[in-house]
Length: 79
Length: 391
Image (cartoon, rainbow over all chains, first blue to last red; front, side):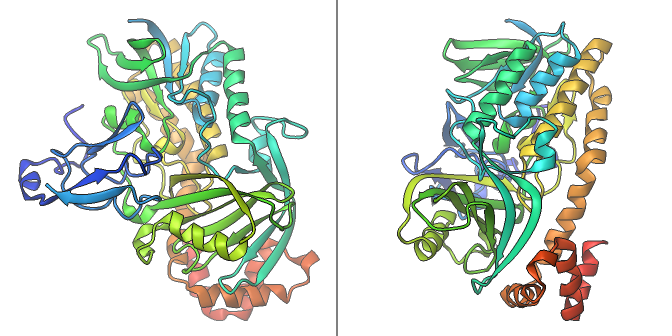
C-alpha cells in the first residue's frame, strides 16, 4: 500500500539521474501555504514541523512548483 | 500508544464537522481532533465568502459573532472596468474565519470530541491488527495514536491521503495561486462582493473584493500560473490593488492555493477517509470550498462512526462515503469543471461585450438566469460556448 504514489513511475532512478536541476525553497519568503505539495509529481515536497522541505533525491527538476508559488519562494539550482 | 476510534487530522471546517458528527452518531467512540497550528482558524488562508443556504445547514449566521458582513449584491467587473450589478436576496456572508473555525471546533468539543491544538501528524503506518499508527508531535512532545479510522481533513497539502496511498496530486492548470490583502480605508459598496475577470488582472481566475465591514475588505485574486506573464500572484495583486485602491492601507496579507479540479479519484482507503480541500472538494468555477468541506465532513464523520460500530473499517465498507459525496456534490463539480474548461476559450472582449449587453437590462430584472438568456440572444456566437455548459 505504501510502495509509492498510484500511477507512479516518477520515482524511478533513471529519472533522478537525469535531473540537472532541483528545486530549493527560500524559507524567509515561503508562507507555508502548502500549494506546491500537490503540484509535485514525485511528491518530493513536504511540510516538516511546518517548514517546507524539498527532497533533493526525489526531485526530478520538472519546475512545476516554481511559477505557481504565490510569493516566488521556489527556485531551481544545479543538482 | 493511546487507542482512539477516530483520529481527525486538521481542525478546519471539514475536520471539525467530521469530529462532531462522528461523536454525535456514536457517542461511545473516542474521537480526537488534531490541529497543527497553535490556534484553530489562524492563519486565515481564505477570502471568507460563503453562500447563505449552505451555511445555514451548519450554523445560524444572524447575529453570530463569527460573521463579518451580510452580502446582498454581486458586482461583476469586466476587464474594461465596466460594472454589472446583480441583486439577489440572501446571497451570502463574509465570515470571520478565525472565529468561525473556532466555533465549529467548539461544537465538536461540546459533542464530546477531544481537540489538540499545536499538534501535527507527522506520518502513519498500518498496524498488524488493521489499524493506523499515527505519529504525532506537538506541545506534549512526540507520541503516537492507534486509530481505527483516520479522517484526513488536512487541506491543500493532503498528507494523510498521500500516506494512505491515495493520489492527491493536481495538474498545474487546475491549481489557482492566490494572494490577498486585508485593505482598510477604501470606498466600495459594503453590501456587495466584487468579482473582476481579465487576462491582465488574474489570468485563468478572477480578482475579488469581499467586504469585512464598511471601508474594509479582503482584496485578493487567484490566477493560473501557466497563463501568467511571469509575475507571481502577489505581484499581480500589488498591481491591481495599486490601481484600484491606491490610498488603501494593506493591514494584512495571506497566500495559498485553491485546487479548481474535481474530487480525487478515490477518497477512501482501508481505515482512511479524506475530506474537504484534501480531497479536492472545491467548486472548480468559484473556488469556494467552505460549505463543501462541512458537507463532506458530515458524511465522513457519520460514515466512520457507522463503520466502527459495524466492526468493518475496510476500504470496501468506507467506499459508501465516496458514493454519497459524488451524489451530493461530486457529480455537480464534474459539470462545473466542464463549464470552467469552456470558459477558458473566451477572452477579455467576450466579458466586455457581455457586460454591455447585461447593463441594458433594467437592474431590478437582472437575475443570473436572465443575464444568461440575454447574453445568448444578443451574442449568438456564444451559443456554442453555452451549449458546452450542459454537455
